[in-house]
Image (cartoon, rainbow, N blue to C red):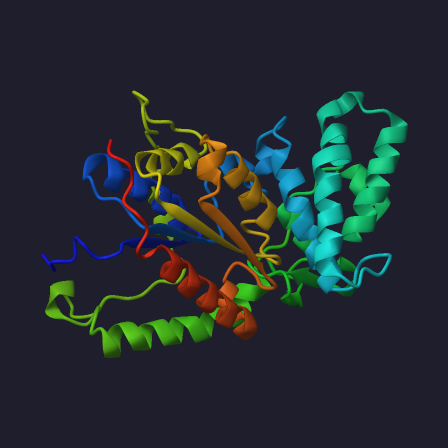
Length: 339
């Protein structure tokens, strides 16, 4: 329609859009014969079994606790809740990542068979890295989900910690609740973003105020119950039936990269994102079912920001520059080998 088949082609997906991007990239390559130059991901969630918010409903699945721990540590570091000082955030997080993949993983694997000594040592380390009380950590069986962490990190100050950007804090809604009931980040930012989006959509794009919408106006809903009607069933590549459990689109992205070995992937993450923890994204990229050679097509960048990396002015500039550099480096990528 627009005569752009020979133009460089990219997908940019944020949050749920990262899930969609993996599927669309594969559909374009497999069904339409359209190869992309790059897929740019912001705040990734591709395997929903790694979700730290719903993990309590999935006993025996401990990986989300492991992958969320570095983000908990970054948050505790930011709010000065750690028992010791760590001047270098990145060096501190490398230490936490190592513990998460080694001693913490080993302790969780023991389940109810864990020894008192191993349980005590692990709880102490979790205290060192999160600032949460040792007794609370033991009571939680060494497993603290996202809502519990957000509720308890600053609970002694009657503050809830933000989910999508854990640098934010707000007055707790219920001092006795197990979880945080709201996201202080969303409360702090939603009004400004809704106003900006509505102004742009209606006054610049002239979208949503035409007779095509019946009464001439379509309401923009920042949050709605529409998400409850989403169909999360998904048929992975080379399978016969859709999966109705937790969505996992890693096979889709892997298939797209195999169809087009020239495809480059860029993952952007915020250290203070508790919705899609940064270490989860790293783990998923390392566990794509692709060759080590194709893994070299992936670059990962972290920012001192949250889920909406661009909400921090410094991180916005860095994100812009990094994405621009990625596109510059890949817009003339060589064509893939003949299939």
